[in-house]
Amino acid sequence: DEKVHKLGNYILLEAKYNQQLKNKNFKEKIDIYSKSNFKLAQYVAENFKTWDTKSIDQYQNFLAKQALALWKF
Image (tube, rainbow, N blue to C red):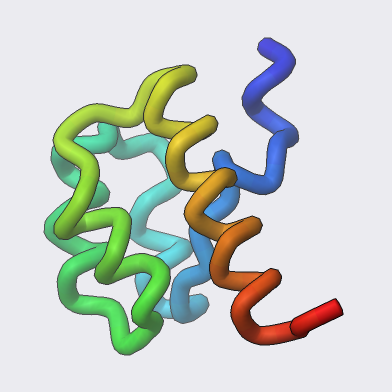
């Protein structure tokens, strides 16, 4: 699938949590994301109930806006 390797499909997470999530479905992952100290993982847990093509695109757009806000060109 073309979306698998898009930036919007990657969620930064602590190694201890990342190992637990390998084959879990998104609903199970949300619980772990909400426990993360990483704000982006928490954002996903708070703002997405499903993880599909639309969600990936929305998250990728959010990341782009955050990058532009941090690194003003």
